[in-house]
Amino acid sequence: MEFNQVINGDSDRILPELLATGIKFDLICTDPPYNLNKDFGNDSDKLDLKDFLKVTEKRISVCRDLLTSNGSIIWFGIHHYIGFIQTIMYNAGLFYRRMNIWYYENGFSRSKKAPQTQYEPFLWFSKAKNRWVFNADDVRVPYKSTERLKNPVYYKDKKGEKKAWVPNPKGAMRGDIWCFPTLAGKKFEKEKTTHPTQKPEALILEIIKAFCPKDADGHYCGTILDPFHGSGTLGVCCEKLNRQGHHIKWIGIELEKRWCEIAEQRLNSVRTNSN
Ligand SMILES: C[S@@+](CC[C@H](N)C(=O)[O-])C[C@H]1O[C@@H](n2cnc3c(N)ncnc32)[C@H](O)[C@@H]1O
Image 1: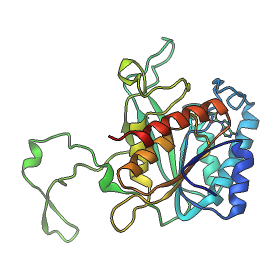
Image 2 (image 1 turned 90 degrees about the horizontal axis):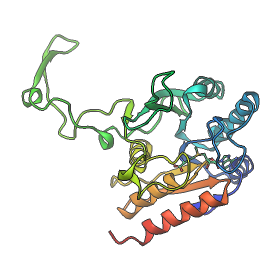
Image 3 (image 1 turned 135 degrees about the horizontal axis):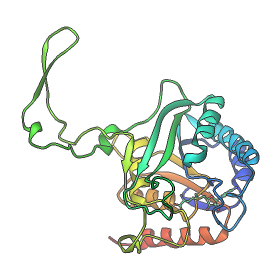
């Protein structure tokens, strides 16, 4: 199987084929259909709830079997059904690590009948109970207070001994709320394609940095799969990192030819851009 390519096809057929080849992935990072009646050019978002859960169950069990022994799944799932999806992950024997929130302030609402939607949840489950990859130092965030952090904070450890805590020069630990704007408005018109649910590159880059294994030189070197690749954001982010000297091997699968073509255009522009 060749890496660093988009496969135009049906994941429900291709995932079992990948499994049969013996290939494994360190990270499966995906944003599958939500079953919210979105128009992706197919009926994948328009299933009866029963069928949606049945197909999700199958997809998650094959994805589990495609993971390396310390691999992880990052699975975007919309508010309505995230509870079902989380239960399916537990039933598949995967191990809960975090329910993360992609928080954005620049959404908009057409209705006054309910609070405006400002987040999308995404689940992190690992294959193993005690082993996984999380590169905490690669995704640190700025400390909120700069003044307070000029002096150490003193505390007593378990033995009652006085200890000094000093801030990490790389920043504070990232929390499970990931704050990145949606691709709305003029600011993002260069990045936005016609795909109806394209994810921001900034968010996907941060997820890769957090969960992709690294080699001894500190380069990202894992294998990553996105079985619902859409406009190609996952592949584009991997290629952008590879242009900086990393060695990520990735595969994207997408049912619709037109989204594959958009992904190819985006990938070509990364690969030919000399900046
Ligand atoms: C939520 S979108 C992914 C958007 C993507 N994260 C991006 O940034 O562009 C889900 C995608 O899954 C695709 N899809 C639906 N069923 C599929 C299947 N069985 N196999 C492969 N792709 C599928 C849809 O066509 C759609 O483009």
